[in-house]
Image 1 (cartoon, rainbow, N blue to C red):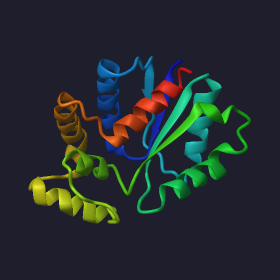
Image 2 (image 1 turned 135 degrees about the vertical axis):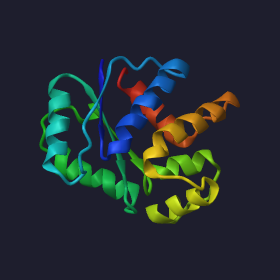
Image 3 (image 1 turned 90 degrees about the vertical axis):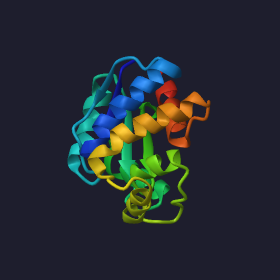
Image 4 (image 1 turned 180 degrees about the vertical axis):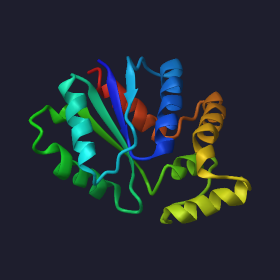
Length: 171
């Protein structure tokens, strides 16, 4: 089965492609992977992207920032606004949240404490450790630090979520 990743910002697409390469090489066969254009969680386009993916027989994995909302609230909003009336098997849809934003994944790799802070604060904490950090650097930095971390056999929680979502597409 092919997998269709739906992402909510422009750096997510590049990041997912990099992460799937790592997942394929080290953990699980991922089949063919497609990644959407960025789409906002509140946009009707997300519902259309989900419907198109499911209609083509794909497993859909949605990767979104929580923007400070509780991850379970973001997941519930996606289900309520985009999934409940689709008429497809919702088991083929997985939702992965980056809380409060994708930068939290980099912070996890750098062992930085970002619990309970907003996305701006996460970025500020990262900038204290990576002076020239800018968001466009995120995919490459996550890839580099993830590869180093995996050399010592310590996959981070966000990668395990992606691996679990990919595996569930094939069960």
